Image (cartoon, rainbow, N blue to C red):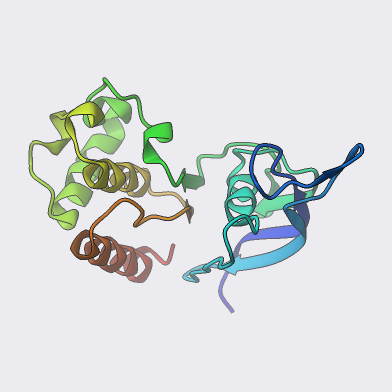
Length: 189
């Protein structure tokens, strides 16, 4: 059996700013209620549902970007509930939220990650000049790809990708999905 990488135990989270919240008097209805999830090495899990169903809320809570209202997130046997952890890389649906707009991509990662970033950029088929470019000089699709490249270059144990092909054309979306398949096969992430 493969190693258990990540699990959630009765994870509950409320989305207090989006359409998933219904407020009746002083009650807040959770967007995600008591979710149990086990993710083993090499597995890929997709979260599907209608708009406003709580998918992004669940992903933010798993990644430590949003403190859950209940339950736990366990990464490699360690409770990381409500904490951002280097073993989990999160790509939000709007990658601009994860990047500094006026800073070149290469300056947004540690020196130790820069070589790996250049390798991932080549795998994505992006230009060799991309590390030196700033997000403000790129299209939405290029920003999406670069944000993903940065996540991959950091070599996390778990990738949490919220709409990883959002804002990209069909050809680019296909390239991203192919790269993710290769990464899974190679790293068992």
